[in-house]
Amino acid sequence: MTKTIAGAIGILLIVLVSAGTGFVVRHVLPIAPANSEETSADDEPHPSGVTLSEQARKNLDLKTGRIELGDYWRTLSVPGVVIEKPGESMHGVTTPVEGVVEKIFASPGQVVRSGDPLFQLRLTGERLAEAQSELLKTIRDIELVDRELKRIEPLVKDGAVTQRQKLELEYKRRRFEATQQVASQELLALGLSEKQIAQARETGQLVRTFTVRTPERDHHATSVPEEADRPLPKADRCPAEESAFTIEKLLVQRGGLVAAGQNLCDLAEHTMLFVEGQAFEKEVEVIGKAMTNDWPIKAVFEVGDDEDLVREGLRVLYIDNHVIPDSRTVRLYLPLCNEVFSDRPGANGSVYRTWRFKPGQKCRLFIPVKRWTERIVVPSEAVVVEGPDAYVFQASGDSFERRPVHLEYRDADTAIIANDGSIFPGDIIALNNAYQLNLAYKASVEGDKGAGHGHSHG
Image 1 (cartoon, helix red, strand yellow):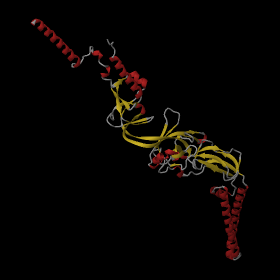
Image 2: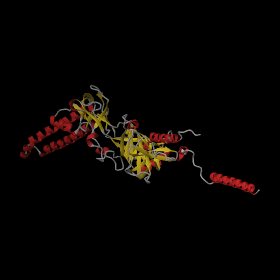
Image 3: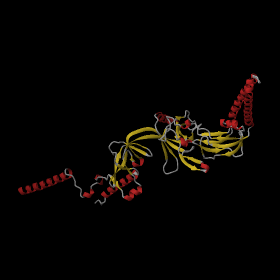
Image 4: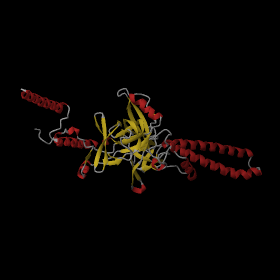
């Protein structure tokens, strides 16, 4: 009996110990994995960058560069077109006299300067001929009176001729001199120059030909106002040598009869032009602020090459004072110093000029709106955005490490990154193809995840 009870107690103790051990193993001690390969791939560290082969770099045309701090303007872009300077760019050349065109000394596109001959006319106007004849007749009358006065001078002293006769001749001479002055003024009004009138006096011959010359330039016309454009850094004025006229259009031909006051040709003075911008009514305040603060404006011209033609440092001279009703836009004007694109030699020392900027040429104006200082300024392609996050890729040996950054502003060309220690001036980053680098980075991460589950679960 006693043995039976002892045996039962022993069996009971064995059962209790076994149950306690199972509880502790299941609920107190952690369960070790059956195989270390079953560890979750999400718990493994991800790669921080991507490594590119030399061929991959070439395929991407990857460009790298050092980060530098700088300033950047956020700009407003408006369309623009080059126009002639109203009242100054075009000059008509008229003839003050009537005549027949005998010679034409210049042709379209040719450079002419003040005083250069343009046309030679054979004079046909009756009034001009009559005025010249009157002048020459008066000159001869004065000569006759002078000879008579010289002849009677000794006779007056001897008493053979009265003093009254001498006084009458002197009075007649003064009357002829007055007539001569009137005739000279009339010839000036009819178009002859003082040099031609003096020549007629000396030779006693009528002026039969007249040369129409390039007019004198107004040197103040090409000066740049203090508040205006200075795209050429070496001067406050457009270069004087480049400020000559060019023949825009001939309006007569040899043998043609022209009347006094008729336009013979058009001259163009494209040394200085205007850029006419067109902005919406709601943008006027922003443009006015740029004009008031004398902020520099950039113009990008369409030239058809791989690289745009850019001119910086332009200023708004004035904004139009009315709104165009149909488009609700306002025009603004910026002076632009022109540049000689080509001077080609012609016959007899002539020069044919082509200007770089031409009326009708289109451009985009970038007007400053807001300025950032001491920021990291990089090309827009150097940054990739994923949701709320932005990244750049920093070069590290053969690899590019993905770095999160604070993107303050971005447009089609430029990105502004805060100088907050995420990257530093002097660091080398990829300047383009950040999007493709990010795709390669994500593919690398996904590949590592797949490799971590490369076994069969039993």
